[in-house]
Length: 193
Image 1 (cartoon, rainbow, N blue to C red):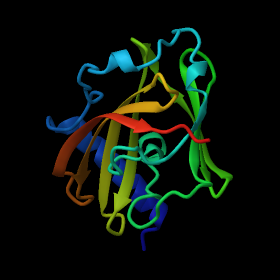
Image 2: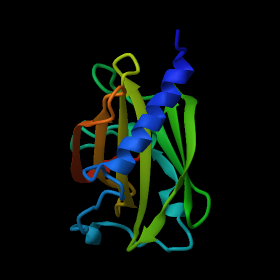
Image 3: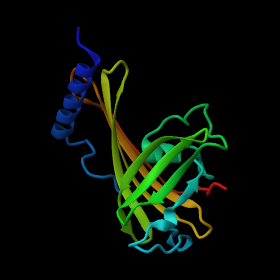
């Protein structure tokens, strides 16, 4: 009998093989369109990203399609019927000119934390992430990637531009099952009081 870690390793290698051998896979970071509302963002010094320091709501005021927990952590906790409560938020803190620390709080307790490496581009902090999930009894590895761009509005809220894409493979035969990407722009996340 094959153990779960062995299946996981086989899935990762199959996914790697499929990514390397297929031309339709997202090998480069996903592109973002040029910013259209840069006049509503604060001027941020390239050497000091401390303007990002703050606590932000998880759902944007515009849509619940892309939430901040998913954009930063690939956390699906707030998808479906679970909506964020007053004690749920994301905290951002500048570490230096290339790193931000993101922390997810659920019920007032820190549940996840990570360093995000990115680069400063015209008052925006842009970063790329990727994630591998195993779905349907570990038979379908899914490769996901995102390109995110964040800035601070003039009233202190967080703006997010996001392009998310992914592709799935069948573990037995590493043929792409599907691949797609979608982008959203100017999502506004209110600063938590």
